[in-house]
Image: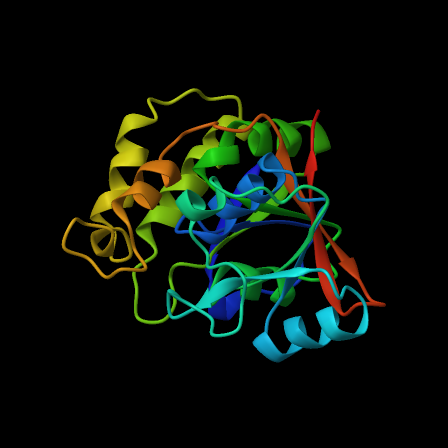
Length: 230
């Protein structure tokens, strides 16, 4: 499988796309499901999330961030350590972030779209391999907003290697999370919205045994992101 890497600005529909967001959108999403969420919808804008709840899911939880910080009026931020302590049994989550969900929306219409991080790396690689695609585009969403996105590139390179049947030592890939532009924010003296626990959870390789597949739902103008197991 040939792997092509693009930044968020270059994201566009393709045959097979893997949208990467390690810090933190696609580390958070599998945690939504782990604590009981029934479904997760990804959107690009805050107002769209609010409108969907008002018109279709009055009991939905709004989750996400803007420039890393929790969005005013939302129920949850974008922190896996926060979500892991909640009970979301049966709830719909409408998710908006500055990078990850933007990448999903920009690649809507692709034949196959994964939302991925280190937490789902192995399962994503297995599903890519099983799909038989000859080329996959990896969207490095962290390469945006003036950041280098190396944490996302590291995850993409590890997933691509595994999808091609290789088994590299994951340690050098995981080490790049903390040294990336985004990763350095998650230090003990970092901002309140960037707890070190989130950095640790973002480095839990293969924490989940499922990939996340995103499917465009035109009637909602949103993407449904669901676990998918091989």
